[in-house]
Length: 333
Image (cartoon, rainbow, N blue to C red; front, side, top):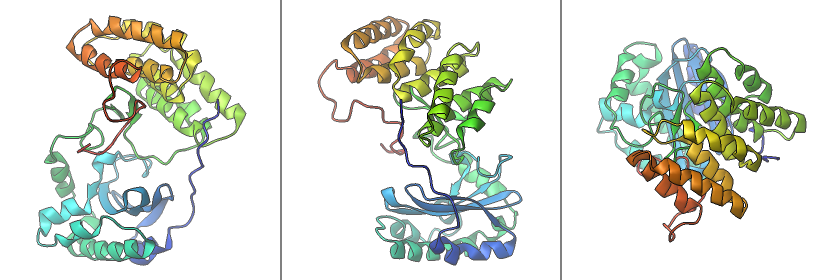
């Protein structure tokens, strides 16, 4: 039942960011979020504008983004709403292309700080009006003209706070720093089904960040309750969360939900049962495959999804990548 995941460290702004972006505080910005997950980053906020510099260690990449503050909580803006410094430079100063070559393949904090310093200079030079809250329609225009590729909700706007992976797994598209389980348990009882659905997806995220068995049990039990929610997106989200939890005890409740799916789109329910069964018993794999085959007869979209999912359960030769879930690998993956 445990989902071991180190709790994300929080605290003071990393020194390399503070040295290069502390000047934002002179403009009235305050650091509202710090993350040391897979590297380090900080979010500075002032009225309607957010600036987020950081170093992604796993991607060997420095990134600086600027965005409108679209959410009540300044940490909750969706990923697609963030305009990357590179996008701004391409719009306003295309000759400054060295940023594109220097912000990749960084392997040390010293290298990262040098690129952050260059980025800070470029931001002050070509984005000072935005930092003062002027001409923010430039950000909207950059977003609107992005190529439609990659994952909706990560690369470009989506009407929901979640998106589907290539396999049909639901995952969140906001960038909220994970909170305590109690927060999502409370939200899961909202009268707004969209809030309940998002809370279900966040419960499994919160579960990875705690070893408190009482909280884990509360989150687990609530996801099972949400499988019976009258709103389709809520039970889809709960199923997807339990699929990521790989909970074999959820199969009896999830399997009948597939018969309720419309058949004109990929189903998170189909994906959830598949990822539960991947490392499960042979009888569980058999009944999931039978349910998937029934779903595949509903139309071309379900058939294509089931072709992928059935392979993950052992049908057919290797496709050259792991049978486990791959939520997001970048727009060109």
